[in-house]
Image (cartoon, rainbow, N blue to C red; front, side, top):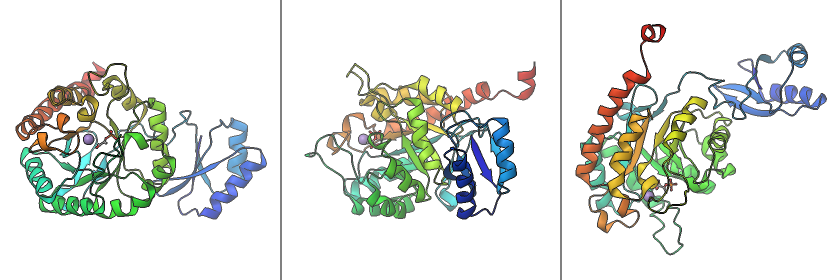
Amino acid sequence: MLIILHSGSTQEDVATVIAELAGVSITGYPARNQGRQVIALSQHLNLELRTWLQQACPQVERILDIRAPYKLASTEYRPEPSTVIVGQGASQVRVGPGGFVVMAGPCTIESEEQLFKTAALVKQAGANVLRGGAFKPRTSPYSFQGMGVEGLKLLQRAGQQYNLPTVTEVMESAYVEAVAEYADILQIGARNMQNFPLLREAGLAGKPILLKRGPSATLEEWLMAAEYILATGNEQVILCERGIKSFDPATRNCLDLGGVVAVQEKTHLPVIVDPSHATGKRSLVTPLGLAAAAIGASGIIVECHPHPEQALCDGAQSILPAQLVALVKGVHNVAAVVRDIYEPVESDVAA
Ligand code: PEP
Ligand code: MN
């Protein structure tokens, strides 16, 4: 259930309603949405309790019977797909229905020369957002860990120079403020999907969040992670499928495209696909990027590098500049074709 308080309600009003609920042994959890104070309950309130609560608490505007455990993220709460707006001014990009975004860039920021060269290619190819890791979650402590804040500064400058909003990973709460200062989208990496303090902290930064699916996370766990961010009052959450663990190492992970379609039925949040980390192999990135467009995803995030053989991280899955050009064109063509199929005009549905 979700209890929506009247606009203008204060923290004190929230505390009062939570105390009333506690009086009948019901635990309410404070959240925020669309500037409103909201109280979430994991248990169901019957009609008698709902009537009592509305009489006992004049602060309550509405009580919504939302059964999904992820409440603010659910299509029960908001049936229409949401749009997340990233960046500012002329370079603003809308992620959501009716469009298809391409986020592209190196796995990791290696140097000024490498990043600016790649940013120029990303812009020329017609991609919309520049990616680049400054804090890298590496399997080995002996692998390149990223340039840190120096990398963030380069990313910001490259984004400004090429008029591209930027996305980069934040790995720990202590760096949320710095990443939010320099980047337009905060990426929560797959390994951190259930790092709940980080989710809260990132949500409170107030910038759009790209939430990657954990390598072994169910759709419900993924949406519950999104709920942590939404509960902070930050509605700008983009989900990203990046492959889940399977038994076969032939592809680095297993891209769960069925999961993307299924999760889109459960949530209004836009969902994009990362065919790079999903496959680990350059030759598989274009086909699966096109497949993401075909299933009605809201975009893709891909790794590219002017000289992948020299990349400090994930060179084998980084596509070449010419491949990025072809992929951007291809996904827009595919997205345009399927849009007519997934969004039939109302008269067609009635027929
Ligand atoms: C990345 O995008 O650079 C990355 C490390 O992704 P993931 O968290 O999906 O492995
Ligand atoms: Mn990578």
